[in-house]
Image (cartoon, rainbow over all chains, first blue to last red; front, side, top):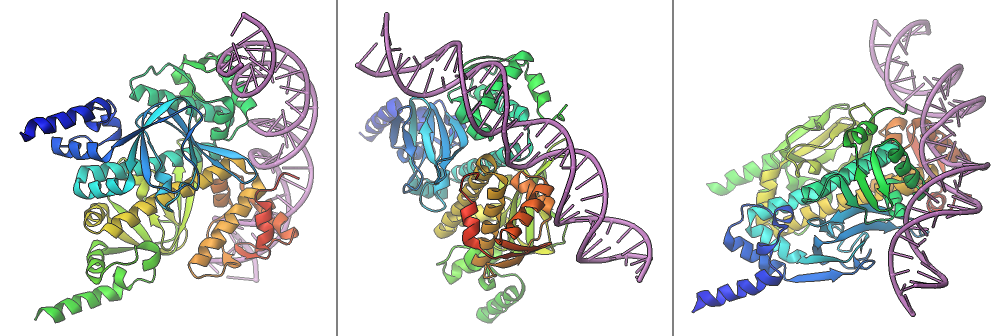
Length: 247
Length: 247
DNA sequence: GAATTGGTTTGATCCACATCAATATTCCCG
DNA sequence: CGGGAATATTGATGTGGATCAAACCAATTC
């Protein structure tokens, strides 16, 4: 009596909603969970949300309640100063986690905006805390995810504080390429989802400088650029740009 | 038979080691713990470590094992690039937590160097995870601490990416002042523990620019500077520097 | 208290990137 | 499919902060 019913429930989940059936499981969840534990997770993530290009998952100062695992699409997170200047703090793709900035003060500290039509899994934070008290590997995984975000930001600080324009852009391209690769996409060709201005904001440069530096890299045979389409022709060359002195 | 013995044990702890007896309890631990729970914490933090000025609590690439709560003193955390350039990623004082960068990859991602003779409480991370599975408010508190670190770094990214030199330094001074205040020290007068070069590294400026900008603020009557001694004379003025346009 | 060392201040000059401006390309939406 | 708004590229010029250089100051040490 019970078994088939349970099976049925899992099936429905599997079709539309389940972590157990998600291709991103390795990116976004710990490995080595038991079946029983994965079922618990499926119950934790009970909502998906579509976010249209230009819309936000959350906005600064909004009450914090959930984290968001990106299921598909592409996002930027950004701070806005009173005077309107804004600073892009990160670009985020499938498998990344959004919203951890909100935990500390119970309200979000930045805007998370979709740069293309996207989909996120809503993870009520209370449930996550609850489950991570029960499932050790989940707790561990979550702590690692937060820690990696801290380390990522360290890297951005290094970039903003100590690198020149060409180094920043080279680091940016190599980072993007690496992240696409680890998600099974081409390392050498991809489409940028963000504008030159957004790249500039992230890298602490003006959009003109971003554009010029792209052109320079193209002249030097390091990349091919065609608006948003980027081909990496010489990734070793890009690595050499990074961390070599001015000359 | 048991009670006095226990009392004795706690006493010894209380004298030299215990969270239960620590003046920083509100900064570094959650409030609202039961006596029993605080005792558990006392057992978690079973080592203190003195760190002499110039020494490190941990270094980049070192195996991660513990977090460190600063009991007294002052630290910087910094990344070093292969070519020697380095980037200070933060300044840390009593009550702050060090080492969270190490969780994600099981090895530390920066150096944590004492800028004056200091003392830290060593928190074995495994024990912390264990306890935070048992004590809900501890779990919650720890997550908030990590999240706040993320938000702090967002702020630094904003500073490095979108502010001019004067704004950066004003933001830096106001932030320091605010943190001293919240620890019961004077908001208007304090001694810098770091050199101009370290401030510059943190703010993405050269030491000469830091020095010049201090002098400029002094001329403008905003602050008094005498080497490492800073007096804030017009904090409203400093706030006005922050976020006003170039002119 | 002279000498050494590490840090700070200040001045003169330079340059990487910003700013201003004009044109070109692509994206949409009716 | 056409016209208008975003977005990108490229050029000319300006400037904030870097760089180079020289005192200056404070704290040790002998």
